[in-house]
Image 1: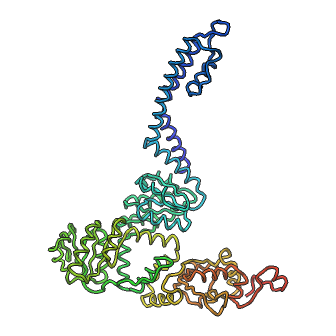
Image 2: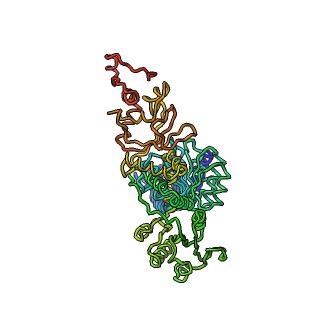
Image 3: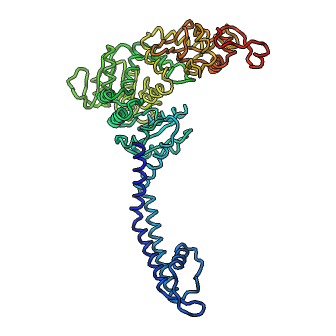
Length: 577
């Protein structure tokens, strides 16, 4: 699709130019031809007064510099009156012709189809020249913009496709470290994805983040059919669409409504696990959150029974909580616990018995309605646990002012989850497996992190014990047993451990969460760490400096410099343990 697509776009651009400029060019050619012909037919006079006719070359030369306003003069000899009269006529004719041609050219430059053709050609050429891995983002709304900034900070190259021109125009004013090619096009068309580089050898993945679930489904289907090995992450709020996506390959599907419900259930059942997850996903420098835990008993009132309301109601009822639903069109008014009506009306809230409820969720797709529902519910029952859904980013200050206990911003939930998967896959694996370890285990790990790193989360990074990343450690791993605790000794004093906590040890497909210091390491192991930045640099020294690793792992002091090693005769053997 790539090569033929570029050829077709180039041909269509040239054809558009020729079609729009055909009439002006024909007018100019006719004026020029008639003017040259007239000069050759009208006789002049030479210096001796004899009649002479101008040749085609001289006539063409005269018309060339006259029509272009250069004006060298009359040649090869002064014109007669008839020649000058003809020259005057041709001058005005060429002025009219040029005015017509220039006007048509300016109109062409402002033509939407022409500008789109030029933009498409420039975009195609830019994508074809990429020589480093890039991610194709389909949909540059709030989620795409949040992800774009975060991924650009990691040094990832991006290519963007969106159907809204204003969103693509924002790419030119965003402070990205590298240029981000953007195309205004419908991603539901497979040809668009081909132009955007889905078949490019350096395309490292596709992020389907369009506002329309059907478009995201088509993107996932196209990627699965064209490049089955390409990683695809798609957003959807529809369980049916999610099921259809999984029928094509194995895309990673993110449903923000489902994730919010999962987080709520985790907070209800395992508050320490939820606290640990919230801390890690916020990134380095984040303070340990102290969330207000939702009530685990009592009745909840959910306003809005759309997709979000259905997901949340199912999750709450799955945990044994009673839920009352209020919606203008709930579908089945006879269903137990469902009230058909406008929740902003006092009599409807009275029917929902809000005064004796413990939790209230404003979950409609209208931010103004959600804000008014929060205010009304707080007046009826000030002690309610309040959760709300924010749909538009511009309303963030209003939701911050009303101070709800839990706030769902679907774009942020989606962006945060996708970023965790792309930036640190081991962290994503840790977050997926962590709840199964239990709440007591999570509480102990939090205390360990606080003891090592303090109340602020340190750096989170991954190391792979290979010859490339850990050349000083791998020989010891091959020669004998090296414990994880030995690797985390301080290079300054090996009796003192570094302020570093291993979160996950991955060997092949087997993962060990929060491994202890007695865990035996092997070449190829991947380890996820968190800790203070200075200690991260010490660990890097251990893995890359042979002299440091000898001291840290085995307590042997080895000369660091090559010359000093030769002078002392103490050259470390790569197989030495």
